[in-house]
Image 1 (tube, rainbow, N blue to C red):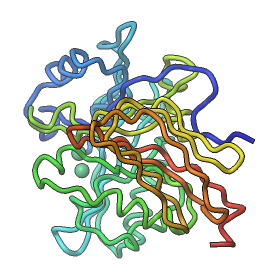
Image 2 (cartoon, rainbow, N blue to C red):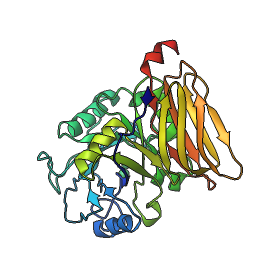
Image 3 (cartoon, helix red, strand yellow):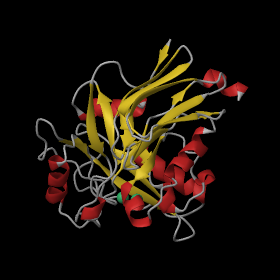
Length: 309
Ligand SMILES: [Zn+2]
Ligand SMILES: [Zn+2]
């Protein structure tokens, strides 16, 4: 039996779901920001302004669509620790409108405040994403109880650019260790020009529409990347297979066993396979190219193995 998160037929579309403009605290106007992404071959973009919904189709073209949405926060007791979430939707969602303003969720206690944030977004039928745990200085137990959210940023390019490190995949693995099916997303979180086009998602969609794309996000039919491409990733008869653009390493990360890293100093690896341990209830791959840029597959979960971990 073949297991994969990618839908069977469709195309990959380049997507960034986290960007800011002068409508909130970004430096470029919405039009300038959109033009940067269009020039760099993006197909889907969400201008996720803080507290303000952007919902318009006036910039859409035959190969570009704006994804309605925003970024909203719940405050914590310590001012350096904060929860941010994205809410994404489509033009046919009548519960949100362009320019709609939402207040940040006040602090009561950590769990209540964060669940209120999630509920505020999901009550408006928005797809939720937990943002940049590295930047937020949170501990996994401060958010891993979320009920309706199963996407976390594993690459927030703004954080990586400003802080030159990225612990977000570690947060991801900590959440995955609970046996939860959590998808990893890469975004720019662009505020200034240097934050553009550093991390994005390739979403395999049945058709080029926002509802189809959101459906693929829910299913995990995408991968996140800073450059390398993942053409396919699946498990068949207990063996994991990956095909990708030329890489210097392909790493299988498995839980609950160790995985394996395949290396090529000339950076010409384009495929790898691994006979997976029986109790590997979660398997994902990371691809690193010659420049040290990473792509992350989504995890393939085999939860019938979870009790054997
Ligand atoms: Zn944020
Ligand atoms: Zn942001």
